[in-house]
Image (cartoon, rainbow, N blue to C red; front, side, top):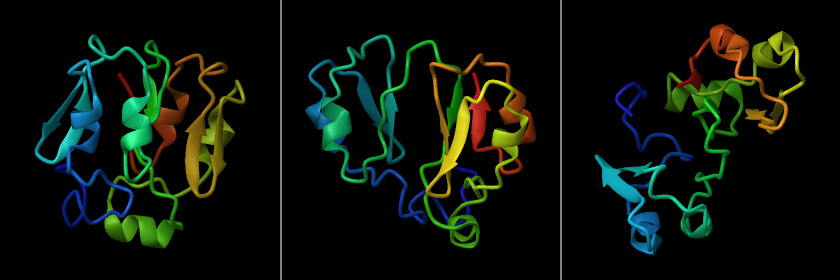
Length: 136
């Protein structure tokens, strides 16, 4: 959140920080820190209650062993997305072009990973100009 231009709430796709997801989670797997929801993977059961509760629809279920993650949820065009955040996906398609496994696509101005195809090679991470794709 610290790297976002204008602060974490500038982006209309950012976490609102209201804690609706934290309140809904019966397993104590979500903690609000500095207005951002953090999910404890060890406590998460995958019940998807937080996904349904998120007012901005930005929480998504990904396989536990996935290490390559698109951190951005902004679906605006590149100019609008960048005006809200320096780490926004700008739909440049570099990740798509470099992926040898057809595991990433850009849809609605946003990179999306097909976790069934992703080999976690990190090539998409290396070419992402705004570093919104990360590898753990």
